[in-house]
Amino acid sequence: MPSETPNGSGRSRRILVTHTQIAPSAVALLNAHDIDVFFSPPYDAPDVVAARARDLGVDAIMVRQGKVNDLVISASPKLKVIVKHGVGIDNIDLRAAAARGIPVLRSLGSNSLAVAEHAIALALTLIKEVLPLDRAVKSGEWPKPTFIGRDIAGSLIGLVGFGAIGRHTARLAEALGMEVSVYDPMASAAIAAAGYTEAKTVDDLVAAADIVSLHCPLTVETRHLIDARRLALMKPTALIVNTARGGIIDESALAEALAEKRIAGAALDSFAAEPPPTDSPLWPLGTLVATPHIGGVTTGSARSMAEIAARHIIDVLDGKAPDEASLSHADTLAA
Image (spheres, rainbow, N blue to C red):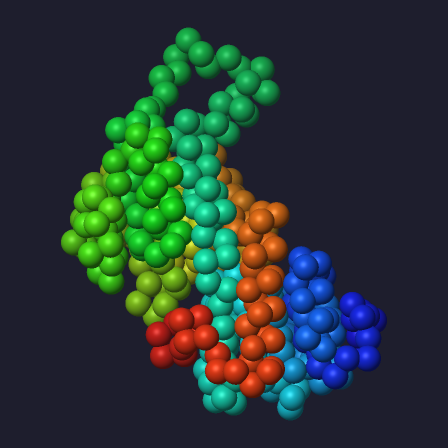
């Protein structure tokens, strides 16, 4: 089965990448360690991906896009490791992997700055009303006589999560003159050391912030962390940015809040379902900015993600213990 061909041939080990490409440097690294690389188009149905994995007899899967469920994980009896080309593992069935003793590893630190840059870009697009103004001018309007913009400097950005991405976002926001408040109960010491205000609860943070920016993983505890109740706590002038995972926001509640002008705007780079449905109630809303989960996809980050993922695969296939810091655990993270 598949029509795809490996980069190189005749090597003793094989991996399947759930995409049409990865950085050439990562392919070369894998090839140099006796590993052939096969590709599976993004968002193919799990049964199609499973058939490829089974027919190839893959030793590892590098996950970029699409669901890797129990059907895929059980397809090849040779499978020894699954690695995410990135850090978000909500599209991998961790429990199915754990049941088979297959470690799931993340490419930590590979795209942190790129995602932070995208979060700030989305925040600025919202606060400066770039898209509404663009649409007005292109439709023949000239809103200059009545338009009054908002200041970036002095705005309070509230960050949920203070891992690598959150820290980069805080630094970039501070450089623009924003005040920074952070909620992360696991990072109190780091927040204090950086000189930022620590919000004691999510409720406190969303109620005070001019911009709420999400930088936490999707877990059992964080699913729908931003729900109708918390959206109601936000200022009517407040904005929300999500470059983390779609399930952290209740999208139905967000659509209602935007439609009723209970908050001023939202920018989403990730969605509960990807690709999202074409009839989403979010699409008609002029105060929503949407990008297709590409915050972490830049030339530099793509190379870094692929190379880190490739090294994880090489280490496990060579018999080394998986990197503990990069392991994903089924009991804490939601698939």
